[in-house]
Length: 265
Image (tube, rainbow, N blue to C red; front, side, top):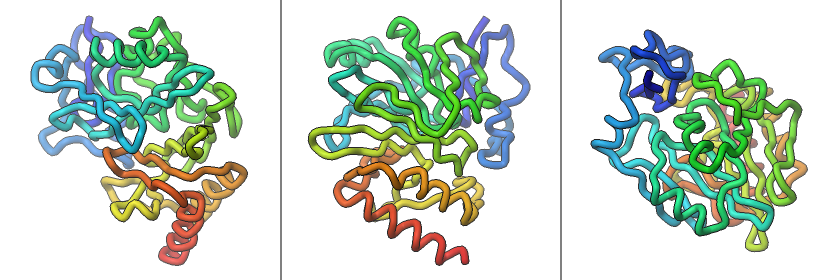
């Protein structure tokens, strides 16, 4: 029995003797199936040609896969006095990464913005003794490898600890969530691509589907803005290496919302 990974999106599926026939995440209109057709890879095969790297990304420890695999996102470690949380996820775990996180105080939980980054979340949880994985209940249909560590929370906000609060924004996915992080050196939104940091790194944008260029409607964007309005934040960390808004992020979000709504009017 093998927990196969989709070669296109990097999400791991429940254990089977043979690869699944379909990846519902890639068949959804927000993603896509490879031109060559659906394909699968085992964790062992992935490790033969790729490695997990750890880098500092604007002062936060980040994890990614080299060479690029699947969607290519990177994960972030939110370190707090009340316990550390891994934000978003990638499709590999390594002994070195586990040791480094343990050196920094261990891992108390995992939280993931949306299903495109679920990857091998169960394996990351197991590597730290089965820590909880916080996913919004509105996205439970996209869980391809059910696991006892998954917490499907409901509502609009969830305080993981006094420093970290999940906020359901919706938009890209119904349960799309971001993580608000209170820090002494400036509060942060860990946003994945629920808020997509643009190459200028002074704005964000919003899409229903990024690869298929389907924009998000005005009501959904206004809802995201309203969900985030009660929170103060100085920085927004996006889903990709070196793609963050550092300083002035609250104003940058407001300007981005206005610009986006004008563009689609």
